[in-house]
Length: 255
Image 1 (spheres, helix red, strand yellow):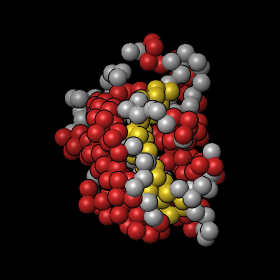
Image 2: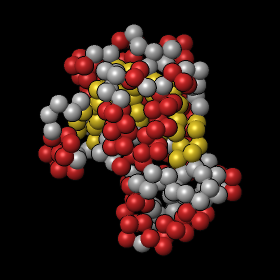
Image 3: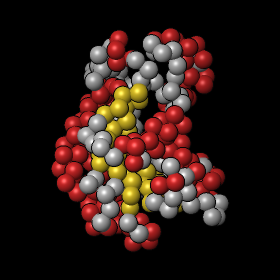
């Protein structure tokens, strides 16, 4: 995978477990990795000390993905400073664990703004930048198996991820003529984010989750990162508009 050497990679939600795993994976391939998240730079450095070290090949910016102007400005600045972009990964997301009866309108709007609008702003800005730079780039959406399986206590999250799936397909068709590939990785149970926090304090819950998965394993963040590298590589040069569901078979028992 030396094809990623010196390629400019953008990752939103880069301070999360999956975001950091993807950043590390591309750094290992000598890519230039630019990540964003909602935290101020000094807090970002505290959350991930690697950002404060010199000569690492990783760069951080505070960006609210729900704000299209901020996303456009970030993508444009990275293009000016580092040259043509090659890969954009729409990873930023938030989740509210509530049912419809208790979910507030503010919580609903926030998840749609971050998970769906933010993904669109990020992907579309990257696609336009690819075209401006003459690059046949690759875009990856981090989706979820919740896009097609009803989760009673994750209504806003599930709906936003279902929207991501159609967004991926629609954008893939639109930008195919420009040589831009757009795909989705949809994980199942991942030892990351809120799940990781809950499971770290209650291992029994993790074992129960593992028992539900047909393959009997929980996905680690670095495994998702490897899948993202693969889908962005020339091994998948004919793949676009595709959703790869890596859920250990969860969707087979809960369609």
